[in-house]
Image 1 (cartoon, rainbow, N blue to C red):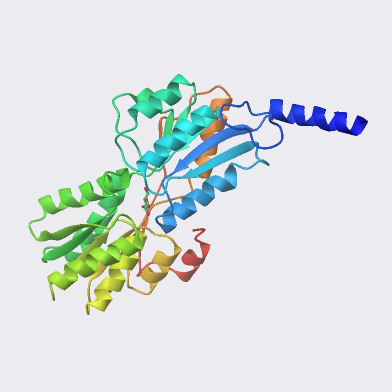
Image 2: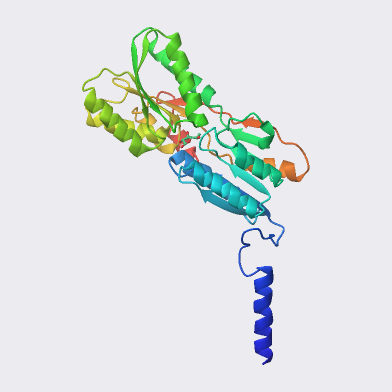
Length: 326
Ligand code: GYE
């Protein structure tokens, strides 16, 4: 009997305070961990995977955090639902890697009304109300494009340059900045021509598919540069180009890539990628510093841009590749 009463009491306790497992919707978290809800774009690229790992590595229980991580599978609706769920769950902070720039105002207003600071990581949003996010940490994509443009200017001078432009997810900050840098440069250089702009959606499979379609239509077209807005698109493009008889390298097509993850750098050392523009995915620590600043009652920087450089096969070394953490 005594045992039965204890069992009933324990069951009642578990039911009322919910301490049997993770807190459910709208419940108060019962420990002093800082609860961080992260809405990640997806796992479309090697960059993205490294970015998620960098977030997961810092927001650990040992470091004092409970991480709620939601992968949106490249759908903005999923990101919006994840944010709403985080608000219901009363998280302390929301980290959002926004898939595209527009469409965030109402859900971010909901977060603000709930008093939850939102930190944007990687891409930016377009809004008239800057108070909808507390801070932004990411890359200067326009600056990355300028590095590619300078390399093209140095490499080709006044020679004609026919360019295939493989774009990333349309409407994302990374696509907008990398595209604008190229388009502006093409407008300034009468010897540069964009043959076509193809949507590769930042994935290898899509880039391969759209490249094959184009190369099948325009058999034997003269190409100097394939400007790929990320590494995975570059892998798909190289595969397609080689299948259609092109050589990628100093004697053939120059493939330009953004991200410069380890596989890309290996291809660069093999001379298949002419230029790898770095985009640093390791943003977890900076996001954590921002949260610590807020916890201390201070105001973090509104925008933090990470430093980046670029690599060519002439200067790249095996040691640099091995030292690359992603
Ligand atoms: O370049 C690409 C990814 O927004 C910087 O998104 C990021 C980009 C990155 O899928 O690989």
